[in-house]
Amino acid sequence: MTKQRRASNFSVLFLVLVIFLCLSWIWQMNSSAPQLDYAQVRQLFQQEKVEELTVSEGHVLTLKLKDSTDKVRYQLYSFELFYEDLDPLIQEQYAKGIIKHYDYPPKESTNWLEILLPWILMAGVVALLWYLMAARAQGGMGPDRMAKFGAARTRGLSDKDKKVTFDDVAGADEEKEELREIVEFLKDPKQFISLGARIPKGVLLVGPPGTGKTLLAKAVAGEAQVGFLSISGSDFVELYVGVGASRVRDLFEQAKKTAPCIVFIDEIDAVGRQRGTGLGGGHDEREQTLNQLLVEMDGFAANEGVVVLAATNRADVLDPALLRPGRFDRQIYVGLPDIRGREEILKVHAKGKPLAEDVDLKKLAQGTAGFTGADLENLINEGALLAGRKHQKFITMADLKEAEIKVIAGPEKRSRVIPQHERELTAWHEAGHAVVMHTLPDQDPVSQITIVPRGQAGGMTISLPEEDRSYLSKRYMEDQIVALLGGRVAEKLCLGDISTGASNDIQRATAIARKMVASYGMSDKMGTVAFEDRHDEVFIGRTMGQGRGYSEAVAAQIDEEVKAVVGMAYQRCEDILSSHRKQLDAVANYLLEHETMEREEFLRVFEESAQPEQEA
Image (cartoon, rainbow, N blue to C red; front, top):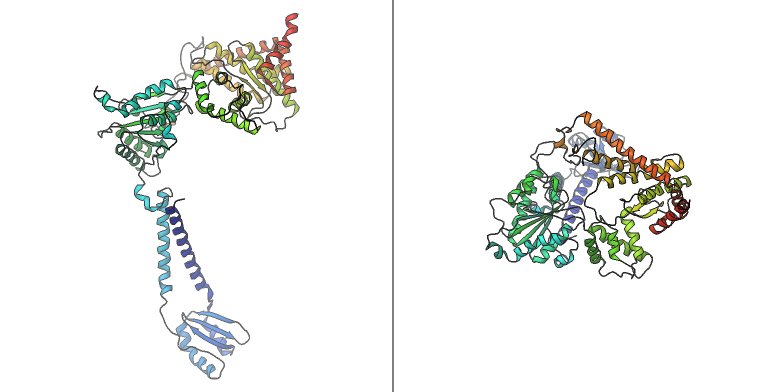
């Protein structure tokens, strides 16, 4: 906490304390002297019960009665009437010595504290409300920074990030080549200007989360050794109208002052979504911010020496005006790394870590198809944590393989108490998946089978691809549906009953079949037609006024064809498991005894259980 914020907090506490003390004083002043009727005072004097009387300022009487040792203070309703009527009676009793002390007349004085206190209290309340409103408008930063509310909250590079170069980015060779032009222009712009070339004003990095888009932006700044201003798309949008547009203007003003400079906007889809897609009016704060961003990137004002880099994993929702040449001239897709890229990424993250001699990063990269750079970094870190938990000095291949499964499915939950009938059901369910996957030539090889709960799953059959796939064939997708139904078929075939454990498998199988029929044109009956081309639409406002692009009759035909595809896959799965019943039972029994089965053990059990059949 800064000294300025501590001082602001102290001033608020002091103001609240002053208001509390003032309220306490007023309450005490009003409640200390009870109200006494004039008739009651006169009655006390007539009955000669008063031993001592003192009249003080503020029309307060202090009476000491003869039958009491305590003095009682009273506030009179009408003090003028008290003097007009009671004065002779008081003087008479005073002369008789009944009243020991009597101040007459009371000293009249002006109580300025009583007069000014309500105004002081009102001023304190107003000051407190003003401070709280100012602090809320500034996000808790205090009223002294009200003038900077529209300033862009940019962040520069830390000392560590300034050292990041393209050498620290692995598995993205083509992406780095695209960005080298930006670096060369920022270093020597005259070389390009002399040829009449115009460097792209903006470069949009698109790709799944965790693929290294932000790291690439830092590497560009580190290579070019120029200014770097980073801001998130959500930092522009505020509750107050006009703040986002003001921050966009301030962002580019800062960039111009430090030119040549790189402006990096992370998660730009937070502010760059298509306009006119809401249910209400289109003139909202986010759209004003987007309009200002469009003007700054390609308006009348020149932004020479300023290159805008932006990152998003939802380029499909960005406004077309933002993507046109002159704003984001170039889009660079940062995809999932291939096997060679994964090996390079693993080497980068394993640098400086003690690896055992049996660690084979190439083999590890081969079994991690579909992993992003962030996943691979997490895998190495989890392996190091597992080794440290075992008090090892080196990270072994077994630690990394366990970390690989942990990243995919989550940690094991061996402490969970599972009834025996559920263990048996899970064993035959997972054995069914494994046997079907092994017998289908196009499916990925089985890597591990377990009936130990992981995450939300009661058991798991993990198959890891041996090669990267860019496209999926019809035969592969049909076999994938058959493999997904292996658990349900095994339950019915071996136990004579079915359970809810296959619900997720059925949902995934149905989704694949529907995409084959309605999106990929893989149905002979429906033809090569894509009926569902907007199944990933995210804008409610745009789709509310649009109906389906096909009739109810066609929808019924799609449903029937999806059901037929799943039905044929179910029959194929049933035939496979019926013909490999011995292998199915052998794998399930092994799981019941050992709970986990690696690939080598699975192949051995499968082959041994098939030997009698081959001899017969």
